[in-house]
Image (spheres, rainbow, N blue to C red):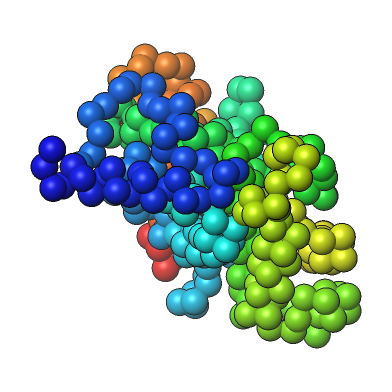
Length: 358
């Protein structure tokens, strides 16, 4: 055995010191198509690296989070959001002695299938595409079908499960029993996603003069803090303390623990989430830019399903219906590319709202 092959084995041996509840490579369900192991990396590390080097990951830097094509340089994008989710999730996973490599791979891949123009883009495609459209399912489709010129990335089952399971309904998504079928690492990504977007979206809303810090609910300011750093620290610390059983240091009845929050912080967290849906996300979806984005995506979908011959060749590989090919193409577009494509086909459709990106 060569020295480099010993490196991977040493990394896998280290995983045996993780929590008994951690997801380990040794217990992985593996890949759909078996591959020779890497000499230097575990399977979850390989998945993380494959995701980082995809075109879909690179395009996240030009996809809207909430504020569509903002003029400022410091608004969150899908890429910065993804990195923040991974940072929060790795902190929790490390504190609970869970698998950081799996955690990072799930988080970096969770939004690969998100549409241009943020949630209004997803809502538009959901109304247009037969059978609906959900970005978490599209993220899974990206890694399984679309990337690598139609071959997919052949990721491990655990990473794919975490990616497709990260979306959350409005309301209390931490109800007991809703996530017991998920690995603890997948549960962490689900929660870290909300921790990240709530906090950077507050900052963006303040930056856009839609909101002032003092307008946040009083209970949120009192329990979670009055600055972004305080809120994140409070949430993350509470998750770790509440989920301490996941470390496996005190196995009592043998039942698998779950990732959660204390009742007090969880209640405040849900108050903040409902506040943001009502005061920021709903307002964003009704903005002039959002209405124009809906018009652009609706036009592009109609045009491309009527002229499928104009879809790039890579979308014809599987001989799928024009509606599916158009959805894949549109979901992969950045805000900038969608505007340019629409202007190319229908000059003036952007109404001057997106002049900075044409």
